[in-house]
Image (cartoon, rainbow, N blue to C red; front, side, top):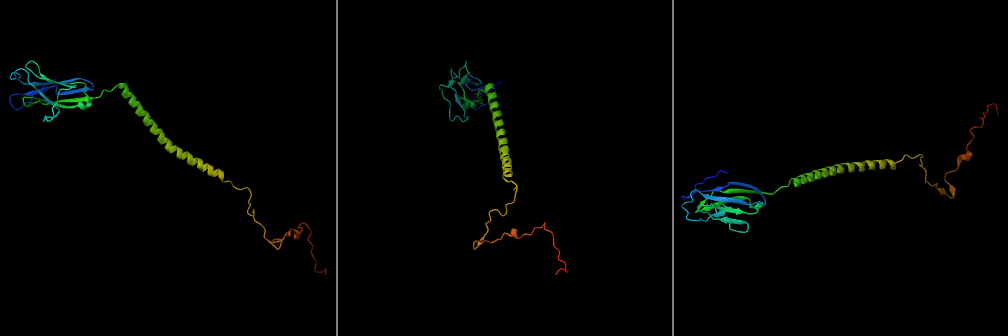
Length: 201
């Protein structure tokens, strides 16, 4: 990658390489801090590293971070081991009070194609189940309403005979029926009519 040159205060100009790094988690990353002219430094020279351009919080050697001093034959560097997503950011180096332009590090998680395909299938199944539940929520009430209508129609039946007077009791006065049986006084309609002539006296 091309080296980006930066002018800083004093006679020392500092640049970093590379300027951008994109890796997956678990990788090891090395960033170099290079002075424009290393000859003025006698022997090795210290270098400071920070993720803050103000260098309020500097990075220190640890089990994960390894800082190497620079010399006339070797550039200063910082090594980040087994990087994680929280290691993403911009790393700045400083030599003799001069800051480098910074190196941006982006760490992303490794994605297995099989796991991506599996997640896609799971999403498809979830969408299908949601659609099925929506259909059931619409169809079930309609079926219940239809069955209720049929049940109401089956309960109501047209009576074959009218029983208007069914259950009525005949009131009695003095032990005799209030209504007399008039069938005994009914005349036989089939009997011949007798016509009385005016001459018959």
